[in-house]
Image (cartoon, rainbow, N blue to C red; front, top):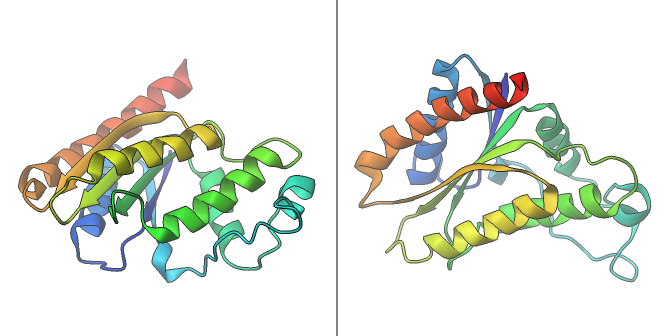
Length: 188
């Protein structure tokens, strides 16, 4: 069992990163091999909407931009489950998540051939460091990305700085249960 965690905050010691680490620890305690990818450390450009809005992504299922998108795509394809942890910015996912997932969905869903990440279970975590009011709309954005990519949702969580004391242990429990659930799905 392989679980990939995508962490989108620039603060590697902050709330978002802490939730990712706790969820991964829970996954490891259930026997999964885990990998953490700090999306902000990668070079991930925004979609250029090539040609008439659809370029190489529609024709070949690949992006014309030469950056780290294919590395992320390969890691997603190899994983059995994905933990996506994003800070909430203005009621939405972090810009690096938008850049990555906007391009990923074009290559995966519009291009020819079989999608490589479709069917991977996902556990989403939105970390709203401010008042927390943007958490629900962030989860809606995350759900839209999952739907476009064909990623079934295991669960979605919102954490704020006020709820961190009880949500960090909840993230660990969610990570453990996430692995158990995927195992159950794979055995059916």
